[in-house]
Amino acid sequence: MDLHDLHDLRQWLPQAIGVAERWGGQFGPYRTHDAHRVEHEAFDEAFDRMAKRMDDNYPFFHPRYAGQMVKPPHPAAVVGYLTAMLFNPNNHAAEGGPATTAMEKEAVADLAAMFALPAHVGHLTTSGTMANLEALYVARQLHPERGIAYSAECHYTHERMCHVLGVQGHRIPVDDRGRIDLNALEEALSSGRIGTVVVTTGTTGLGAVDPVHEVLALARRYGARVHVDAAYGGFYAILGRSGLAGLDPRPWQAIAHCDSVVVDPHKHGLQPYGCGAVLFPDPRAGRHFAHDSPYTYFTDSDLHLGEISLECSRAGAAAAGLWLTLQLLPLTPDGFGRILHADRRAATTWATLLHQSPHLELYQQPDLDIVTYFPTPPHPALSCIDTASQQLLEAGMNAQPDPVYLSVLRADAEAFTRRHPHLKRDADSARIMRSVLIKPESEHYLPTLHARVEQLAAAHH
Ligand SMILES: *Cc1c(COP(=O)(O)O)cnc(C)c1O
Image (tube, rainbow, N blue to C red; front, side, top):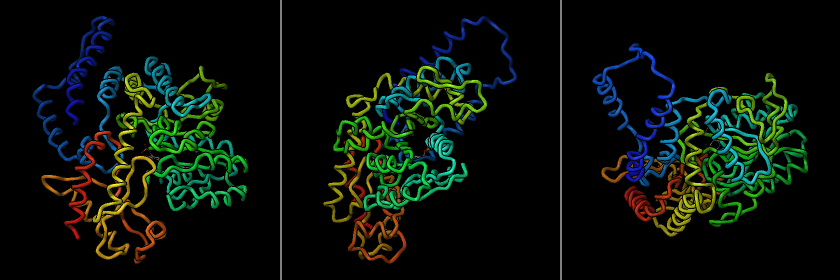
């Protein structure tokens, strides 16, 4: 793990135990039971075995890992989570844990402010998938006779959740940057069969930002709602709304006028897994969860987390981890924004280096911090690129002592040759390289990372 983080953890972790000791001490003595007591020796032995098994992992914390959107949580998130976990509150209802319920409301209000929502009802979830399911559930409740449109590049769970909800899904093609195609969307909308359009601000594959502002205008013209899946890219609203880091402010500013938005604090938000969020700018959305509850109205100040959620039990600890993190790194350009700015600089710098490289080619200009590229093939054909990409992935992972961890993404032939018309289309698709530069450390490490990936690509010619 990051050495500074480990140092901080050594200092801060014992305080978690201190809090539990102090609080627990006020309830009087009682006789403990030995039914679940274990010997220290037995623990050490079992723990040793587990510790060894943890060697079988990828170094998500290290900038030589430039694969998926994973990084360890911030030490403050770990300490916040662990402290609350010792109490084990359940945020399905205020009675499950008043303190962490209040922290959840405050953290969710911070997320709502990040998107500049005028008002909101919302809560944390265990994942982006669950958060999107809730948003699509509300979409179905409001337009039971109409379907849901999403782009071909949207997260695969939207299609799955449409099946779960028994809603007709409409897959809309994308343009040559991987963004929802507005002409195709308008055609679908004009059929009158679309009740809600899903836009993605930062697709999971390419990191492409859909033109939320344009989709919103179109959707409104046809009486359709708009849901924003910002699970991966949402924290970029901090920079995007002000047009910082070279981002187009219009999609980010339009989010406030959409009908729901999802963001995953367990991606950019420095939280351990088990932390997504769904927000509705119109607090009346809460009523759709209220069928079997005695509560019939919901406002900003009157939030019953259990009654506005499809899930029941949820870790109050997740709310505490997020809350504590946001006290230290507020969702502002000078707070959290510094991390995103560094990620973004790493991505644009790499794009420039890839553009100049004789051994690698940029697949497309990154919108956020996902960089897509491929090894320059010996023959300009998709099949060659496919093989070379897979080889580069494996060569990087298996290289000792200097490994790099990348990921691959499958691009379809049509999309590929639209961007790179000189390539021969001798396969239906080709794998390309994909790197998510989700850690600010990537900014400093980039020259090393680029040189190493270039070296590996050159060696496999
Ligand atoms: C990661 C992701 C999801 C799914 O979120 P989970 O937290 O993995 O369930 C949905 N949409 C987008 C755009 C994502 O990047």
